[in-house]
Length: 454
Image (tube, rainbow, N blue to C red; front, side, top):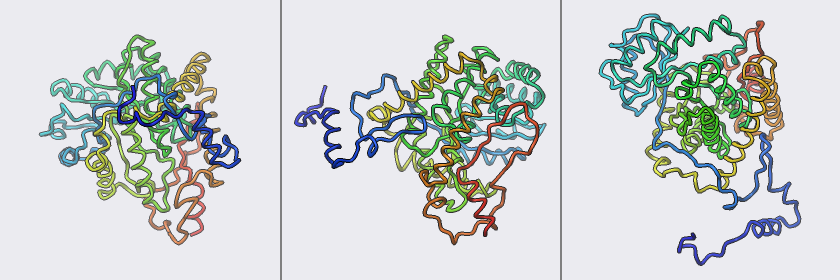
């Protein structure tokens, strides 16, 4: 029913809009001038009407958390670091553990863990540490999570650390140990995005991977699985992508009669479009990506240092990364409107298109074989490389623009002597069981050439 506020305005049909645009184009072709087709094969038009209202129900959490990552050193020092992050409203914290013995009482002294989510990356999944963490979670009602992606690590490295059977059996034993963890798998969908997969591929391949986890570890894993999603620069597409992830996982989990309506999503800005030259532009890129993640309905957003490609971790960049999110939360107020995307016919159209295309691809892959078999025969890697090649070609020909890199570059800028870490990592040449999925920045090769010429 139309509001009285708009009753004096006539409804304009889709046909009338198109006629007006064709008139304004003065003889130019409508399809070639104002329509465009995305990497996913989605036709984007210049306008959308209520005809494109989504058939799906969108889910956006009531609030979202700021997330950060730390490396455990001395327990008392890390305790202070965690407390400082909490004062900055960081309520999701990932802790990297690379030591055998940990005093948890010192590490978490005077910290209320009933509302702070702690994600643990434990080197070699040390049994003793995991057992201690589980007991601590039980006694203190802590919100502990395991940040581990067994299949994602295999995909990235091309090899199992030992062998398939041993690692699967070991993880089954670990699942029996960490019974008081809130989640036990953090599926890195970011692996696909940062290697060059398009959005439909990101969603469908991630769902194939999640389905493989169910086959390996049973349906109980459905409630203990989170998704880490890398957010790119195509703003409205990325907003829609997050909703499509939710819709597809609800569909797949429902097929096991354990419907997940509120999939937990951790969003990160992609590294694929980040640059060394004019690196301050990375601040704008990541802010836009964080905004898309929030509007799309991520549960938490983990921002990275804007200079992390070439510089060691530092307090200044870390503070800026957190402040970007604090500004979005407290100054931009973008979380004050409940479900702001529900009124956009354009986003509705994209959500439905991504959902349909991704589910179709998922079913095609699932009918033919399992996720591990597709990795073994190279189907997934080949398709990702094909799309990555298209993106790279468009970057090289300046159809895909990175400001300050392939367009509007400051050729007087010198970066060679500012590099603190290698911005062009290469995988060591070794025999692998499957072809690994390699993350790569679009600007990497051109930057490497430019630095070599300084």
